[in-house]
Length: 205
Ligand code: IMP
Image (cartoon, rainbow, N blue to C red; front, side, top):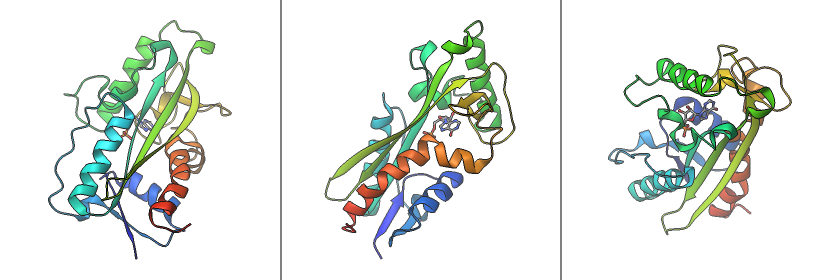
């Protein structure tokens, strides 16, 4: 069976991607199943740069088609920040995980102090790059529009979920059931958009 290697070690992303690609007659494996893949420094200026760099690195190291994603939050009142710096908005020396997540969204709430409801518009954006050994590379993206709340809400999810209220909902991603997030999220939308491209790479259409 043809093989697609996911350029991520994030367990929940791997499960989410496998769930959506489940219907295809391909084997989906994480890059952690291979030895010798070089560390990838995500210091690109755009989501596209980071996703392409990750996908090409994994394809070169494994000789297989690979899929990489990069995502973040864009806040209009902050001219698109934190954007590509979403993961390290509050600083790189804060331990990764819940502590970093809280520091990031608290910094965001602080910067938006005094910004009225109608001006708190924002979106999560996810870019997916799919690369093949011959050098072929394709990009797709998914966007989830919403706004930044005034206070954290909910305990689920990760990252900026407690402060992001998607359009059409009145609770944050962290307070909504996971299946709702998995249907409307930027990542779910980018993954769905990547399906025809993956089929094309594996000559399934
Ligand atoms: P990544 O490129 O998907 O690892 O995302 C980079 C950063 O964007 C994460 O560390 C989070 O801070 C933020 N982010 C991306 N996707 C989400 C999401 O679905 N919910 C909350 N935060 C997210």
